[in-house]
Length: 63
Image (cartoon, rainbow, N blue to C red; front, side, top):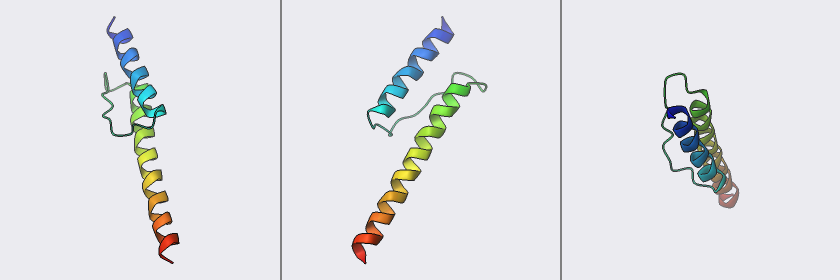
C-alpha cells in the first residue's frame, strides 16, 4: 500500500510537470527512491533550461 501511494503521488507530480508546473517539491519516499530522484532532477534541469533561455532572449533583444 505505501509503495502504491508513493507511485500515485509521483504520477501526480509527473502530470503537473507535463502541464508546465515546475514550482513544486518532489518528496522522496525513501533514500532509494529512484523515480522520485529522477523527477526532482527533471524539474531542476527544466528550471535551469528556462533560465538559460530567458538570459539568451534578454541578450538577443538587448543587442
